[in-house]
Amino acid sequence: MSVSDNPPLESPAGPLVRSVRDDFHGDLLEVSMGPHHPSTHGVFRMVVTLDGETIAKLKPVFGYLHRNHEKIGENTSYLGSMPYTDRLDYLCSMTNNWAYALAVERLSGQAVPERAEYLRIILAELTRLLNHTCLAGFLLQDSGASGTPLMYAFREREKILDLFEALSGSRMMCNYQRFGGCRADAPPGWLDAARALAGGFGRFLDEYEELITGNEILMARTQGVGRLPAALAVSAGVTGPMLRAAGVDYDVRKVDGYGLYPRFNFRVPLGAHGDTYDRYMIRILEMRESIKILQQALRDIPDGPIMDPKARLRGFRPKQGEVYSRIEGPKGEIGFYLISDGGPNPYRYRVRPPSFINLTLLEDLCLGHTVADAVVILGSIDIVLGEVDR
Amino acid sequence: MLGTGLLQGLAVTARNLVGSFHDPRRFVTTQYPEERTALPEAYRNFPFLVCDGADDPMGTLRCVACQICEKECPPQCIYIEKSRDKKPDANGKMQLYPAVFDIDISVCMSCQICVEVCPFDAIEMDQVFELSATDRFTGLMLDRGALAKPNSYFHRIHPTQAAEVDARLAVERAAAERKAQAAAAKAAPRPAPAAAEQPPAAPAA
Image 1 (spheres, rainbow over the protein chains, first blue to last red):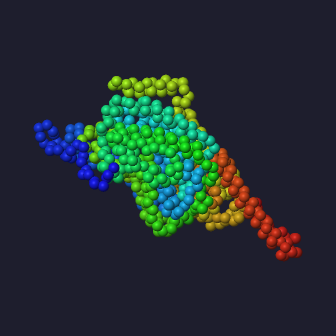
Image 2 (image 1 turned 90 degrees about the vertical axis):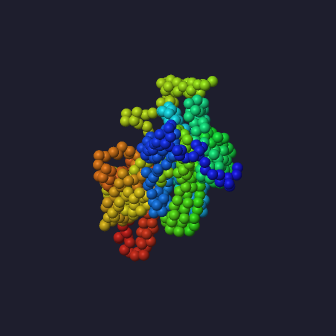
Image 3 (image 1 turned 90 degrees about the horizontal axis):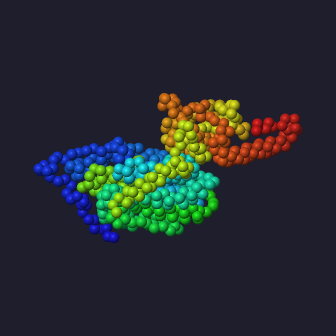
């Protein structure tokens, strides 16, 4: 696909604002949704200008959850930033940890033992399952299926969180990866529990799909809603399932082949329409691929140490240099850009948050649709405000 | 046919509803204050200070007030003041002890970095989570008296980790004893006549 000739950004609804005062249309109405609206997935505010029920303009307002993450990262040690990365995208602390650990490992040339690499892949794929289950539940909640699908999704999520808790001591704020490996080895029986979960998860997906995928109301609410053209997605820097739902074959696991991913056999599902329904389906399909990766990893995981013996916990000072390192998080490409001046703190610490960059297209997706659709579209983008605002 | 998907979904809901009455795998909730699930061994909440003797917690704290955890704590919730005098530790070596050791658990984010960086295995993660207080400034500020808990408690909540720590400390203690004996043996032959009547005092093991 050629993307070099950036096409002009056109909204599906045509010109942004129509002439307002005519016989049939009244004034445009500005509605502020959020920052405490339950459908905005946190403290996110949408200033929506409405023409009747149709969205004529949408201004996203965020920053309510800004916690100075990057500045704090420049003022604490490299290790001290690790627990803060849990709090970026608080559903996916394991992948955040991995992205940060990978950046620091590349900066300092730190090797990682094979068992730790396998554990990281297992945890990253469990996180993907967890995130996509949550998304499937929340998306349905946003489209009006209140309760049931979300509760089914949370029932499964809880099993993954139990695994995380048994491994790292915390359900969500795992703080598990370290530079050069993982903090603690899997307790006895953990890998078997993970195998049981990976074996049973496909059954849950079947049940979930039976519950909702063929649902006519869901189809009516999501098909053709919030269409994202592939060229627009690429030029806006959208990554992750949202980009793949638009039909662009781009997965950092395949493109970069970080960790041990080249050893694994999995496919990258692609959407055909780029609408909200595709974005829902792509997550279901990705979960099925994640199960395959999990089963391969849990089959092949070797014994051995989980920390590189040369890794240092305290007094860690990487040599001067800079690095940008990225992984495929459940929401898209999560990257860390670090500059080291040889001191104990990074000189510059920058996060590339996937949900923030995916969110920038919200207006283009929502124009011409109704307010109720905007809620569904926002749900399908999959944002976590901890990561958007940092 | 339009509506098939809806009915199919309703059938799933019905199966789950009926199943929730007789299939134990579907009982996924716990009635919390009455029922409690067992915490996994790795579960961590807030730090506590390990002391070796249950009857004298302040005298047997393993902490030597080196302030590494205070320095490494990402949200800076630990406050330590060193003592002016020294006390013998478990190996008989004279060590400082924390005159003040406060942890503000309203700031603590349970990251466990203090535990990882502690060279003396003096601070470990607790599993008590019912810590609500009516006053956020004093009720959630734990001093060393509230933080000190005996090693037997550590064994109860984190048995594997506590066994590892004890093994490591036993090795250190044995090394300290060997060193003391070697020092005694080395010191002994030089003043040969005096050594017989006045053996060098071996540090209290």
